[in-house]
Amino acid sequence: MKVGTSLHNLMIIGKVVGTVVTTISHADYKHRKLLVVQPLSLEAGDDSGDFIALDNTHAGIGDTVLVLNEGSGARQVLDNKNACVISVIIGIVDSVYVEPTH
Image (cartoon, rainbow, N blue to C red; front, side, top):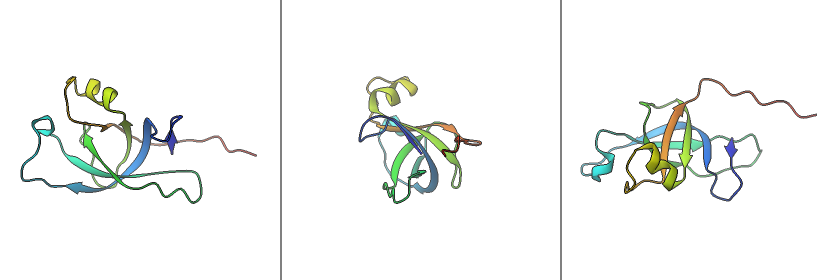
């Protein structure tokens, strides 16, 4: 499920499907995990590709997460205006309810 108005949606609900292990990484990633997120969608045929997001919530594989997918906002979340990041996990989702359409 994506929320946003442009091709690059600002908020994405997705499922964590993997981790990224690095030997050396940027200092902005220190003490944070890089997770592979698969976007979820209510629309049939929406096959948006998986992407990597910086974890800010202690999420793990199988968790449904809320991702902020916008660099300026992501840097604000990290409280670092120069951070090298675009996508950051900002919440672990317990449930989603969508009003059925008729």
